[in-house]
Image 1 (cartoon, helix red, strand yellow):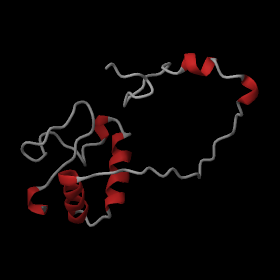
Image 2 (cartoon, rainbow, N blue to C red):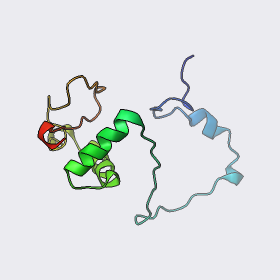
Image 3 (cartoon, rainbow, N blue to C red):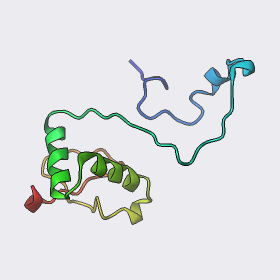
Image 4 (cartoon, helix red, strand yellow):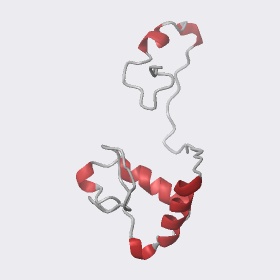
Amino acid sequence: MTPTPWTDLEPQPGDFDADLATIDPRFVEAHRGNPTTKVRIVVSIEGEDARRLQRLSAARGEKPTELIAELLREADKPAAKSQRLHPPNTVEPGVQIPAPGPTLRVDRAAS
């Protein structure tokens, strides 16, 4: 089954243009953004990934939510500036990391 923009994990610009064109303009409201608004993202992590998150955040003296927030901030930076969390070749043996996404540094001494 081929993913659609509605189910694809990474929809592309323009994927929803045809759908948006069908909306009656009477039912569209434009609102100015609020730069102080917070977004809550609910993440479910299980098994070895959950244990890894607990281990990494404990080693850094952070809550798991703080580590995830930092990873999101780092992922938003250009690759050249985000070496602190993911320098090349510093992941656990056997861990598969999809390219070109951000990687995570794992210190063996801290685990």
